[in-house]
Length: 289
Image (cartoon, rainbow, N blue to C red; front, side, top):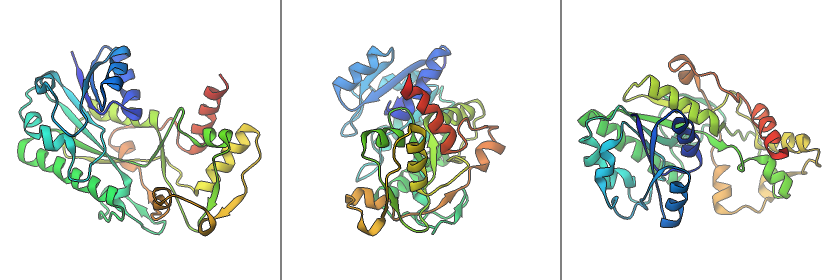
């Protein structure tokens, strides 16, 4: 039996896990609290607590894994999974694939220019710097111990319950305009599709960008969401006048376009949602139902 072990069975990982479980895979996953872990168990997964502050209470549970997905944030010091379980993972005999979910934030600000997997890493945010360091740690584990590591750099993730339709409907979405600002996105179902394609065609040491085909200004996405809902389009608000938290403002510090050619040419992926338009239209039907 194929066994997926997810460090961090959250928003993105759950879509992959549900698809694999339906195909007969066993799925083991972690969450930060006993309550959330119990919720995973209720969904039919083998849940375990892992909060990053200590190792798994029973590291032997890793032994069954044929595939591992690391989907936890890089903390202030280091990647928690590497910190506590690098040695355990390096010893696994049946491991065929390990995926580390990183971010396109590692490329930093490019003034709207294009980047690909060969581009130099220039993270401008502390959280992106930690991701770059974690990537290096995982790739070192591959180089030194032969662990079948694959790195996936994710653009902004959206999907059911986490999209601009929800914000517009709540009245919390704003069309903040910063000249030249470009964001890239990826639908959560396309993330799962790419991960499955990589599992079917492992290439240890590979790095993949996960973004759709159409980088776009954020205000365009809000406008399209409002039009789909038949609601008034929020007025444009200059970035300098927007009252953003420091976290919200930090996302506007970087502007880049992310190439996704490799997932297509190497993994044969055809995106289900090649732009925010297809993605939001599909999510609209979910909202209506």
